[in-house]
Amino acid sequence: MTDKLAKVDLDSGDLAAAKRSAFEELFPGVLADVVLDTGRLGELLDTSVAPVPDGRERYGLTWIR
Image (cartoon, rainbow, N blue to C red; front, side):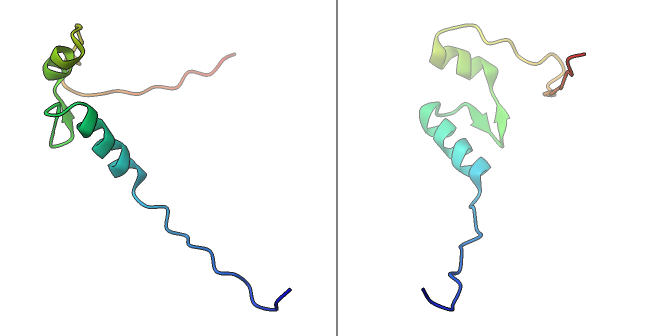
């Protein structure tokens, strides 16, 4: 054993950017300025993709009683 502590790299990188990049590789032309083009995504997936009615994404959390 040594008396010195090992340094740990605390940089986790930009995980969101990595996921976004992987998504763009799988579905080219679907994201423009980080906005999802649901019509183009539907074409690539050969299925209907419903757009968000007012263009804003929403998230929610529901607690079980």
